[in-house]
Amino acid sequence: MFQELLSSEEAGCDPIPSRLLWATNRFRMETENRRTRRYGKHGRQHWVFLHVLVVLLKILLLIFRLYRRGLRNARRIQVESIDLCLENLPPAFDGYTILHISDPHFDSMPGLARQAAELLDGRDVDACVLTGDYRRHSHGLHRRAMEDLEHLLNHISARDGVFGVLGNHDDCHMVLSLESLGIRMLINEHATLERDGQRIRFVGVDDVHYYFTDQAVDVLERTDDGTFRILLVHSPELFVEAAELGINLYLCGHTHGGQVCLPGGVPIICHLDKGRRFARGVWRHKQMTGVTNRGLGASGLAVRYNCPGHMLLLRLRRDPGE
Image (cartoon, rainbow, N blue to C red; front, side):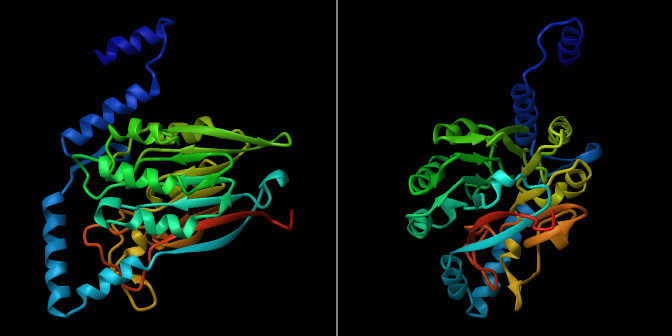
């Protein structure tokens, strides 16, 4: 069937809609519990093993009387402001503000959305970006997480709108629910903004940690026309391809900054296949600037140590040397 569709395209018929192709691949990977990485590498998702690790961690924390402290730490969320000095940023976008929210896992922490909304009330930004993992589990219902996200979005004023991508805890059925909240989901797609005849472009790709397809790289290639580009992706693991294809700013999450860290914020586990040095904060790879968000919520256990949850208020600044 797939070969027939390709033959039809070659014969001059309409090509396969990219979202249909994506949804077909994503649904197959989800239902087969299959993990796909670049260059055709496949594997199974080891949810049972991860669940066992979470249970063991909770037992250890209870034994050492650290569990309650971790719960309190996870509630100490903050808004962190960062100025980013960027090469090739169009002058019309100097001072552009982006609210970056990642990994809320709303149903892991009841009341988190209300707490975050209180921190954001009265703030105006140019754009809000969401880089995935809106719920706790990777399968099943998502209504509760969507209700919490809607509450938070009602307290966000973003002049150019809200843009989002999926994480590895989000399934393909969530896209319509997310878009019904007014989020412009970028599923291997892009959106261009213009001011005074100058442009920047948000490019969004599907999760590359579990659900990589060549469409992620394809959209980077198709948008490589010299426009200043901001890539939204759940994980930092696409950094090599993004830098090679001229991405200017890479915004991601997924790692929670480690969530459980040693003093000084040194992560014990990052849940990354590559790019561990990009597990948190602002970083640089070749000519590309990246920011890895520590996440608003918590994954597995609703605890944090030496790694507070946050939302990022990013202000883009033009490199004064240009």
